[in-house]
Image (cartoon, rainbow, N blue to C red; front, side, top):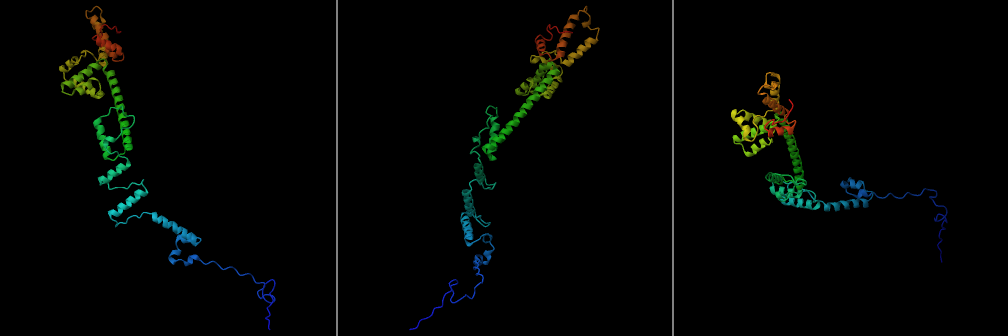
Length: 327
């Protein structure tokens, strides 16, 4: 019987026989992992998603995200799309973003009405509510209706209407206040200039306007001094320009005929003071008493409305009326 002899194994290296042939050589380096990008189609390798991915798994995650986003996206119709496709697109947009409002054709009345309703325009012009704080204002209802109709036609929302109306009312209030201020200042000037003849001149101007056939509203406005300084002077000039008939107008409305403006009265006072032959300067003259009375009357009228109480007393008494006003 034959036996095979087995070579002895080196205890350290495990090689057969004595010392191994590659003893002392450096260990071999591990093989480099394959380039996964090289397996992609050439046109795909340059994608940004490929360049930013460190592994196929990263790339696949990015593509899965894009696929999901694409499935939720809304395609914009091309220039060749018909009305039906565009309507579907707009409906998708409204569902995805209700806050977006499409811009309709401005010549499409129905589309514009829909837009105005979306933006908050009331259904009818009468549904507009007035801004707070104007309930007590005396507004012309006819003019207010015109304004509401114009606001509704222009597509104003409730908030827009309130803003415009508040601005308008504020401007109108300031204008009326300025007008009242000018009127008050004008009447004060006339009272200063006309003195005790202020009421008489207003009555004369009102009477001539009535004679010329003007409405009662105009006549009342003149007599109450609501026509303004320059208009009042113009009407008085017309009354004075009618001659003797104009002079008679002063008594038709209860005015005293022989009143004077402060300037006129002062001129007569100066004339009497300079004329030493006047009866006023001679107690023995039979006309001295009446001259003194006239001087007192002139002093009252020369003061004008500076002393309103004395002025009213003078008119009540028929000028002077025993008022002892110093010469």
